[in-house]
Image (cartoon, rainbow over all chains, first blue to last red; front, side, top):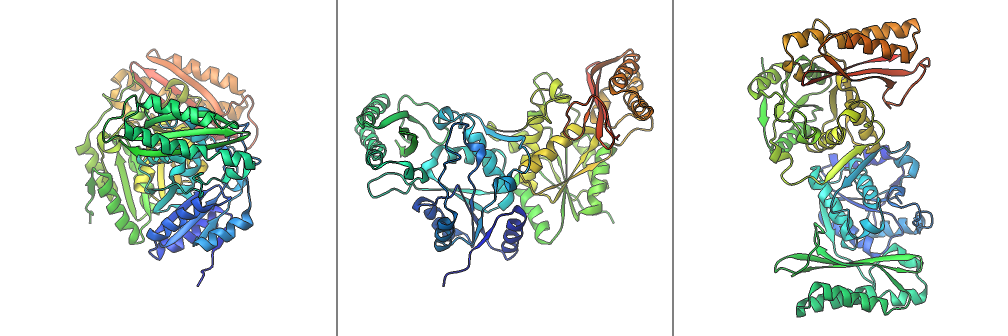
Length: 286
Length: 286
């Protein structure tokens, strides 16, 4: 039997329904998204269903986390399709606030996470992680979930949010979920629809280079040499333009020259194909 | 019958006890303090008792909100006395965490409230309101109260916290409480204990100048002229050194040249006596 999914656009109504579920003793799981759902998002819902009794998903394209020249306006949106996917995946309550509902007045409050926000996408997208931390903390205050589910594809986002939750003692368990990939290895992303067929094909180089990096690490190739070889692999694809190729400690994202046994590292990539910027990463324990 | 007050130093134990009260359907009131309690604090407890069934007070001298040359180390502390005062006032649960309990690792997360944090004490104490907003949001996440009680003596702090709570949809009702004064008008403050007898006597000029300001406003004296007259009154006290004398809109704390009918304004003062810095203010509706 497929249960009925409720959809609400207001904070007040969301709170009322979540409060009701909470009073029934249900454990509340939360999957925040920007919509245009794919199997990556749906894997978060599946994970949430395993440990929670009531799953809330939000769909909100958050203007605070887009830079002035980024793709806020053209970010793909299809609420009809998302609603059907969310319902089928087992979402109980879909929260679809407007920008005016979330930010009725100028937002003066900013949540910043130092250090963890600074490298990688923090370099390429100034202010991005302030926008992410601020909206996620606000969504946590609205939904008050017991657990929230985030994909490791956005590994730096996950690190920023985990640090914020720990620093501020936010009573939400953060559950990281593995990257979901297309059959040819491309990490699922709402932005993949931007790619031309040719770009789409060449974009498989992100995952190929990450798998190679892992193999090279096991062979004992020095980290600098690995980064260089990855960059060469990527630039061999004529449409690819590297934003960054980096290896750092995880989750603190500090620089690392030489891998030490037991250390967790992240190989992280951002690569542009035309106007489309893709990210991918791999966590490895040395 | 005087009820037993519990005191806990850990976040985990605090949460357990507040959770128990919440499950009993009790409304949770919260009074955050830095201790060295006076009648101002106790008036907050009294107000909390009027509308809540379970009152939590925290005593935590928060290092994040003190500048490097400020009085963190010598800030007055007397936990024995505070405990007795809190108990008599009707506090149910006293939360007394150590700095290590609140900040076991370097805190990387900062909550900032633009504009409202910038004038007045924001000028004199750079970073102060970031420290206040960050610790108050953390305490709210720990206690998860229904309502929190703040004195209007720290009017800018109240404005910063109210703005933060609104921007982030924090599910806590912020209840402002009137300033409590000594018989001669000096606003109660833990820092009053720093004053020499001579300074203590001259410190009454803060409230005297505020009452005059209100009278002058009613007479139609222009705002600039009022500020100047207040400054003259204060500097007539030989030990007083003005940090600021200001009139702004409230609660947004924007500059104002001419009072418009119906507008809420704040006359705000910070004055040093030796090493002691005192603040006071008066809200007026034009």
